Image (cartoon, rainbow, N blue to C red; front, side, top):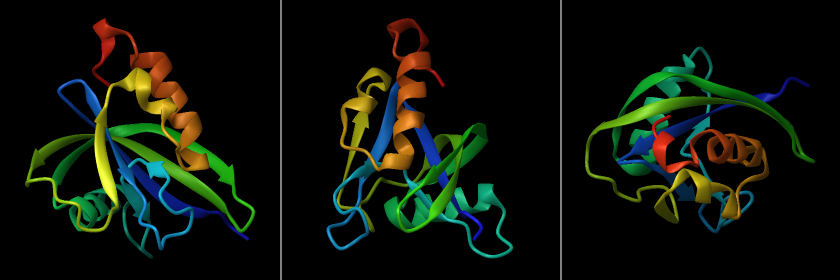
Length: 137
């Protein structure tokens, strides 16, 4: 079986990274994650990021480029996470399809109870951008 392809938005704003909390009725309930979601058939990953962030948070983002690719095997299925750097360009953040959100300093991202596939990504962000002088992704 092929891995499920999902996207993740690494949205940096004023030196902080956006994390969202999964809804209580979602798989892996109430864990924190980077916004994003499943790639639709024939959808470009960058379009997926824009769509998912709009649907979940009513935010508009510009996709700046790929940041990382992570393969993770959950008990029920493998996923391939395409993580993109993004900039918030418009819209007022609203929790439309999430249970919460937080803007977090890069060094603090790994301290959250994250979705397992996001843990390596959080560690890289903290390692590369956790210093006060290098908070821009």
